Length: 156
View 1 (tube, rainbow, N blue to C red):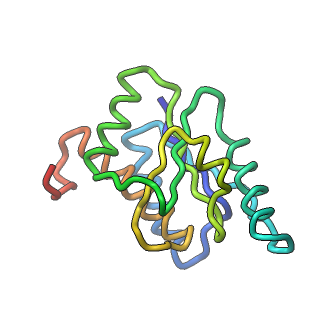
View 2 (view 1 turned 180 degrees about the vertical axis):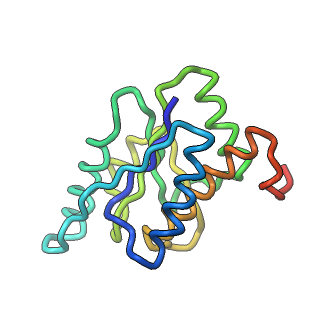
């Protein structure tokens, strides 16, 4: 079972160190890989930009891996629920999960609709780099929860 974080663009210098740190920590607990796809130049319409970026994201997901669209309109999961979700995939010998983070304009509607799950990190609209940092930390946290380690202080 593999955990993929598939995101549009490379993080800028402000958040890159923190993102890399939490992605490295997540890799201690799960077979983890961060995949970056090219950002679309904002020459076309917002719909065209989202469609092109989402097509790249989906093309980066290996066959058999279920997708989780990270979108403000998704369901809010607790850290414990994310840990249980990843543990359940591992127990089922599933190929894995790919968390899709769109670019500045978000994901295309078809990428959201075609995802097995839709996950909201916040009711706020987050910059995609901040969403990536938040998700990487939560995947790491899910690993510590799964192993019963003391990092997670939340109830449940």
